[in-house]
Image 1: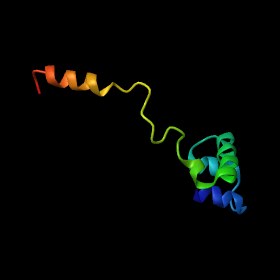
Image 2: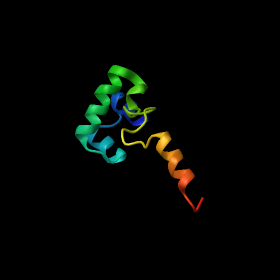
Image 3: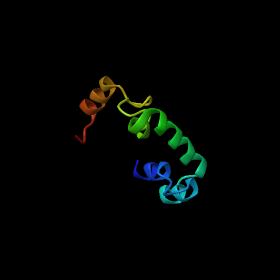
Image 4: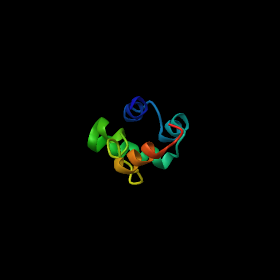
Length: 71
């Protein structure tokens, strides 16, 4: 966010910010546009707080733990 604020203040260019953030200049422009619309919440990953789609169900995990002789 500090880097995006510096871009908005005119202290940094998108190219300089891209180097600092180690992302492409295009990605910096996308982040900045979203940051301007949504504020700091735009920086968090979109899947934050969600379970992954490939998560193993708790019932299956429990069965595996019960049947594991090395536990």
